[in-house]
Amino acid sequence: MIHQKILFKLLCVYMLSVMDYIITRTALAKGAIEANPILAPIIESPIGMTIKLMAPLIVLAYLWYRRNSNPFRVNYTAAFLVLFYSLVVTWNVSVYVFYLI
Picture 1 (cartoon, rainbow, N blue to C red):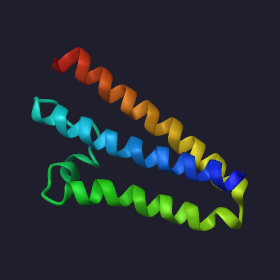
Picture 2: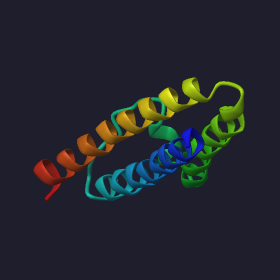
Picture 3: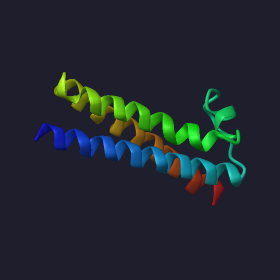
Picture 4: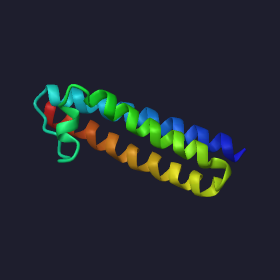
């Protein structure tokens, strides 16, 4: 049962990560500036999409691999990541709606 919850959370994290990327690229096309100084050169590079979409996938695959050794820690980590990416996507949508439309 806990493995199903972990899988669901990890899938949600990846979907939120993809949404973050799509909203960010759309906002950048409308004149927004990437606020994260670490991600700014990555997002704007030709391989930015690959890096932005593969890095979370690698982290999530690692968490899935570790689920048997400490399922509760992985579950809490996945829950934290869902919360974090939910806040990031909410922020991106609010910036897009209030400042770019």
